Structure formats: structure tokens, C-alpha cells
Length: 242
Image (cartoon, rainbow, N blue to C red; front, side):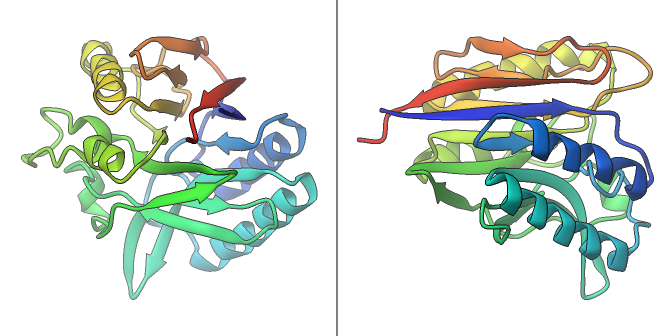
């Protein structure tokens, strides 16, 4: 068995990168964890009008913070390439270098007003643990958020050998979605027998409709942050690496 410590940060995400970056750097420095997960678009803000130059400069600062703290951070960010915008999870390893990226494969209809879908479902290995990333609607393909088929990405990550899925979220406070979101988290964790680690963006309008925490392979919450306001958790996971 391998023990890893994971952390999830439920933070208010400003439209302005300069508001978000100091929070991200502070959590990287102070959090006692091997893996630190931040919400969807937590660096740039949830839009496509961010500065590419400022974003890349912020990536360098995040990489340096991970190197000094010797931690791995999974940061939600916007990403621009060839004139197109993508919603991305960027994985900064403990050496400060980027271990890999994942681009949201099932953007909502609202997302698609400013971004393109990604192209590849990926897994990564660190500390002898194989993991994958999903971004918000990728996991649950919420009815009413676009006429898109469910590609069952969590299931396919399990088939690729993922033992942990890091799920970055920015889903708001609409309570009508809570039961659907959280039953999906439980059932998909049970189906593929992996942990799902979540971090949702805090919502100024009310409690989040998908909890920040960890769902076990049995579909049970191992830890969960309060739904209202900014919070963070850290917890140990036992991973079977045989």
C-alpha cells in the first residue's frame, strides 16, 4: 500500500488573475500535502479574456513555489494556443516543471462560447500512483448544460489504470443539481474502484452544489469541506500499488 496526502482548496475565484494567484501560491507554501488540487479556472478566472502573457508568467511563479515547497499542484487555468482557448488542469510537479496537462473534453454550452473541447484523456504517474484529471462537466455531463453525449470519462480513466481522479469544479450554487452531481461522484467512484478528489470554487451566492472533499472507492465521503465560504482540507489516502 502507498500512502499519499491530498488536499483540495475551495476558494473564491475572481475574474482577475492578480486576485487568484496569491491565494494559490499561499496554499502551495502552507499546505501539508503531496498533491494540492485547485478549482476549475482558479488562476485566470472563468472566462476567455485573460492575458496569455500574464498567465504564462503566473505559471512560472507556481512552478517555483512547487519547487521550493516540493509539492505537486493541479491548477485550473485558461490556456491559449493557436488563437483558441481551452479550459485546462495544469500539473506542476515537485521539481517545478510541468508534469502534464489535461484540457476539458466536455465543455458546457456556456463554456463553448469562449473555449474549445480538448482532444485527449490522459493518465499520469507520480509517487507510484496512477491518476487522471477531469474538469467539472467532464464527470457528470449535466442535463440542461448542452446536448452532448456522456463519454463516461471516469470509466475510461479506470480502464486506463487510474487509482485516483482529481476533479476540479466550478459549478455554482444551484441546489437543483446537488443530488445529481454527488450521486454521480459516488457511483463513478464505486464503478471504477478509485478515489475521487474534488475542489470546487466557493460561490458568493450560496453553498456549492458539489462538495469539496474526497469520495472513496466505496462511494463514501472520507472528508468534506463546509459548502459555504473558502475552506481547504488535507487527508491521507491508502492506495494499493500492487
